Length: 255
Image (cartoon, rainbow, N blue to C red; front, side, top):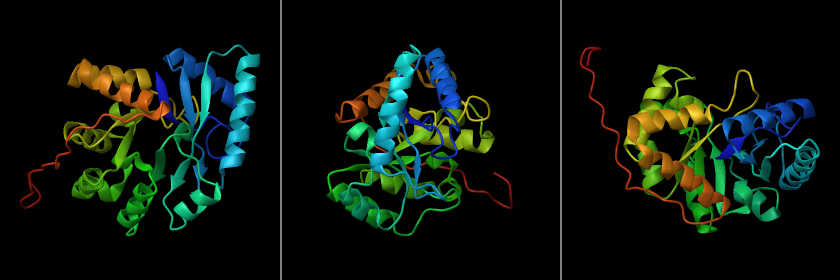
């Protein structure tokens, strides 16, 4: 199993705070059945400025440590970039990392809204030959309220990644419900942990895939797992034709 989104690198952001934390996360990942993790520290989110060279060096160091302690896990470099105006400028400067050096790049929205320049920025990203992957859109307040915005992004070539914890209800019923709507409308393409630690923000990957198998069948489990593998290989991920999420309108506060 491959986890494309994890904050396992120590002391870079709000994920692992020490080498001990990183090792504990690595051991827990192996218990979950995860063989490969893409480390995705925050960049341009609050005070976190984790550039390509810094992340690459930390990944090398962590892999050496995992080998030393005989932990059978491979860590690959990645980055979780908060969407900002100079993103592509910094990419050409060599400060921005794609996922495992592929053509896929993680982009993050603020939790409460979608930046007005997102559509134009996605166009610029795609013009450069990269594919934007919106992380945890199910936890974005504006997208929850206006899912047609997400539909437009996906229709125009963006991909999305939902959090395993959202699939199993760790962020509440409303987010779980929106996650299910997204999956049913072909608006998401990857499941990943976004793990930060082994307590409050754990992996939940096995539980999420078990839930998906029970509710949607083995074919959808294969779809998500294969897409994660295709990112690592820099292949063409599988997509289905996106659909608009249909909701019944409220009348006088009732359905």
